[in-house]
Image (tube, rainbow, N blue to C red; front, top):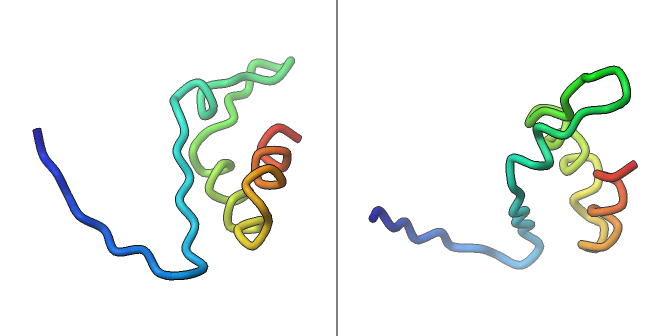
Length: 58
């Protein structure tokens, strides 16, 4: 098992997700994908965790 230590500073954001998010499909069969997830997070990183979650869902 590999371990890595990461120092977090005030204001940093950590998002944990599963492949169920990035592989979720819309009605047209298009996957959400990692790029979209990263885009939504980068646009909402100053928001609360609840608001980031809602932005990902929307």
